[in-house]
Amino acid sequence: MRLIFIGPPGAGKGTQAKVVCNYFNLQHISSGDLLREAIASSSPEGEKAKQFIEKGLLVPDEIVVKIVAERIRKIKGFVLDGFPRTLTQAEFLDRTLDSLSISLDRVFNFTVSLSKVIERLSGRRICSNCNAIYHIKNIPPRKEGICDRCGGRLVQREDDKEETVRKRLKVYQKISQPLIEYYKKKGVLVNVDGNMEVQELFERIKESLRRYDTH
Ligand SMILES: [Zn+2]
Image 1 (cartoon, rainbow, N blue to C red):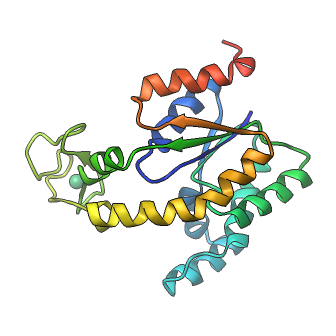
Image 2 (image 1 turned 90 degrees about the vertical axis):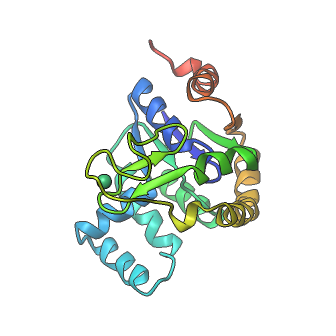
């Protein structure tokens, strides 16, 4: 089974991807992780990506798609988490899948309210020393502002500040609209409510995938 999860930051895609992969025995592919791995392994595409990142530029779609394609070539079932991000990436991806004679089963579009995203992201704290992630409500550290693991100081990332979150969401809405339309036309799009709690949402996703469920 091949799935794509699209949605704004804070919509719960990553958490849901882990649960779904675990249940259906799929591989969780986050393009961010793949990019970091490619760079660390100094693969040819990784080397190219690194040059853009070092200049503070976005890695071009074609390179990102090649890195993702390299991985999906080798596995049977996957959840692509947060990829494709743009219509161009989606078209590149389709060509790659066609050349491998494989097709997508579903694209889950996570929608979420602004207030929920702000609640989830603006409560996030990260250890300035070991990068452990906390949440002031959901995963609080034992001692306020201090990392349980290493005693480092917890900070809020610039990306998670309320004003930045609002801006990121606006940008997301704009670039994702053509992507959503594209998958809708292909007949594979399923809208899901990212405001739901993890288990409740998982039940919905499972329901829409029941013909693949062999449990
Ligand atoms: Zn720490």
